[in-house]
Each structure stands twice: as structure tokens, then as C-alpha cells.
Length: 357
Image (cartoon, rainbow, N blue to C red; front, side, top):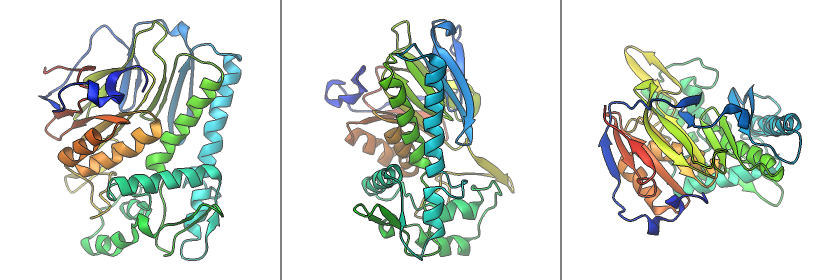
């Protein structure tokens, strides 16, 4: 993040988080141009930006950018081509993706993967170590057990969870950088890179735009947002954070430039059974949905970092999660509890707007 102070925590003053109990926030007289985890408000005409929408990566991707060094339609095509190329490597729903091949060979043999998949997996394991396993790229068996993969939802029994949790262990994943192979030593293991790969893909899409000298851009891939520069009028992009208990409302607004923003929320993928609501952000240690937070928004230098930390901090909970953010120079965060208490890391407190209705 090059255009705000959030990447320099020594210059933002008080390290104590800003807290407010928030019932909801409506920002009037602003134009809404996106609403998946975030809302983007702007004070300029849409004609200033080339706009495109496409369903890909199992979500709606919104792309807006100012003129670059190639025709806008051609640049749009290149951005979506890069997204599509990478999706074919990372998606578990694509049978011949690198990730699917690694999972199919679990307990059998190592699988050679693309440099991109090797890189993201190495990053995933690094963040697993940093977060003491709160983020774990081998979470696939638990996701499948709950039916979040394939959307055949069910609540597993205690014995099922106890039997499956040991197969979620990033330390068992064997990465051979020299041969570019990944190996899962037990046949019930599986990798799931969705909590980091989408961020990486958005970063690569932004790189396509930057190589074409685009000065203003916004990509929203199902809540993973990448920002280049400011909006065309020179003002920061205004990113609204969804109220996790009233998802048609906004609880806070951030003013940002040149950074990435990702939210993980308990309202995003969930189901109800016997009056209880269960969501997809599973604690790898116990196999159950994490329940100390309702949403986590991370602002970071890259979408990959924001993506992985939004999951990890959600699982760590408010105290440990906020402490992790404060210990890092590359990320800031907004944590919202189930009671709608809003916890803001020190680097964002001067650029966030929170109101109590």
C-alpha cells in the first residue's frame, strides 16, 4: 500500500484498536458499484472507466479500469484470459487442474505442478506456520465432510470430526522445490487453496493492467478486491464493509489507494440445520466453524496476503487475530464480532468511517 499510512505502523500513533458498537451504517448520496463483501462508492462518472463483468472462479468478477497502452477491449480480454488460465491450475472443481491431480495422487506419489501452484502452496505453508495452523492449506477433508465442496451441506458427527481432523496437517505436505512436486502422504488428505489462490489470481490480473500502464483500476472477484491508484478524480477508492448481520447495509467505509482488500464473513457460505447456522470458515484444530468473529476485513499490500490473513484472523479470534495484524507491517484489519463490536487495527483508524445508527 503506497498511498496511505497503513503500511507504516510507527507513524500512525496510538497502537490501541479503535472500538465502536455498531448497529448499522448507511452512507447517503453515494453511487454503489459493487456488493459482495464490500461496496465501492465513487464520486465520478462511470464513463471514466472501462467496465466488464464475467462469471469465473465460481463467482462474479467485476473489472473497471482507466485507459492504458492497448485498446480497452483487448486489455479486458487479456485480464480474463489470465484469470481463466490460473483457475484451470488451482480449481478443485476442474478435474485435470494441478490441485485435483495432487489430491487424486494422495498416498500414492508426488505430482509435478506448475510454478504458480508451487509458489502459492509454498506461500500457503509459510502463512500456516505464521498463524500456527489457523490457516491450513490441507483443510480439504473437513470442507468435504461438511459438504461445502459440492454444496451438499451436512453437520458431521463428533466421531467423524475426530477421525478426519488428523488428516488436516500442513506439516505433512511434502514440497520439493527442485523437482516442483507436491505430495500428500496419506490418501485421505487433500489440499484446498481457495483461501489464498483467488487472491493470487487477482494479483496477477492487476499485473496485466499495470503492464499496460493503467493508472486507475478496480477488480472485485467475489469480495477479493485489488486497487490500482486512486479513482480517476484523484480521491481514494471508498470501500464499504458489509454489516454481517444486515448484509444489505454497510457498517464502515475505508478510503484506500494502491492496495488490496478482502473480507471473510460467516454470512458468505452457510446453511441452517435444526435451527443452527453453520458457515464454511472451519477451525482446522477442531473441525467446527470458528465462532468468535462475524467478519474480518484485511487491507494489505497484495490480495494474496489479504486473502489468507482474512481467513486466519477469523479463526484466531478477536484478541489473537488483532495482535497478529499489529505484529505485521504488510497488513491492517477490521474485525467485527457477532455482537457487532468493531475492532480496527492502528494503521486504519484514521481512514475508517464508523457511525452508530
